[in-house]
Length: 296
Image (cartoon, rainbow, N blue to C red):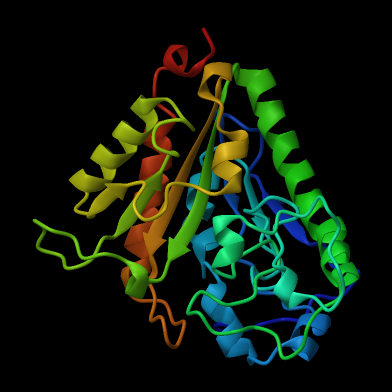
């Protein structure tokens, strides 16, 4: 059923790695926020219903990039919901106000993401509504991190290092979507809103040729594209993007209004074209001269 939210049973795998035969491209794709499984402990503690919780999802992003994976690049996707745990954060970015007990000293309480309620365990959904009807205990967050966060990053690190060993470098495309209501108005364009934001941490997470190439490809296809504003990249981009070592990461944020109704979560007809364009983008990024992307 369209938009179905399924409970995550303890025996279910929390991750999927989509691969079509042998890896032939030095690319890895990741979709950390498109999961639609909502564990019972989240639903029991939440003040929002499942529809409200879905406002934090990067809905269907894994499907949008599935065609790109068919080119020969593995796609890692989290099955659990972002409202339950956000793996595009440090492992312990937590807001003390959310918890009834004291947090360990190593917890990052003061990051910009924590301040706006979007830590590893989020306080609010993307629309700003509070998630929980009660305060959590620290052990609840710690269990989520142990069961889901660490396995996700072990899987991602494994895919990336295998890719680098095989090709001499890797390019990670960290795939996201963004609420259209949060986007600035685009000046000098026939469209009123930005379609895609490319984040390379202001030039530090990948070789400039990658972001330049991606922007040109997408602009030529008619998308309104900007760089690093308002999304320069999250933990994944900064942690895995070390271009001097042949480790490149580019974050891609797609405006949800392009491909879905943001109230009903139904796909728009443009969904198919967008998926085709993302496949083309991946294929052309994979064609960048490897000599540029390998470490000197």
